[in-house]
Length: 196
Image (cartoon, rainbow, N blue to C red; front, side, top):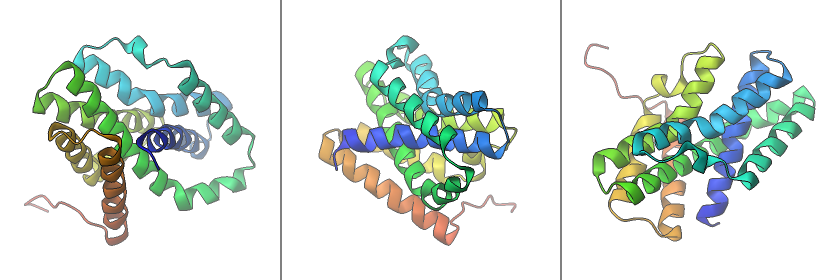
């Protein structure tokens, strides 16, 4: 599976998580589209602001069309189908987390060859859309409760800084991040603060 395919899966997965959060919050179909689009593009907007790139660069007609088609399918599906997503949602969400973080670091690398900028860009691209989604849904942002999210996005940024930028390397990083996150969920890995 190529890096481009994984990144596309990540975009659709993030849109779906936004839509399903909207459905859980009992928002209207407009809410489904708003949260789906916010989750898919919110992190990229924050990234472009950080690296000084134009936000308009995000508006690729094909990607937006595919996100809108995915959201429309979710709106039209019977609500019982969302239970199937819950089984696989974290898996696909993990692909999105890794692919967005890598895309953020790669975008930063084109503008600034600086480790700190790459790490920030990876983190905010990977986490930003989901955090905005959760805030709009009146929930505590998942990324702030499960620190593995931030650690994994930083790891993605570090891999790009090391020069792991060809499609095979990016695909391996995505697969590695997915495995680590699924293990962290399965075994409830946490980084405890000293006073906890």
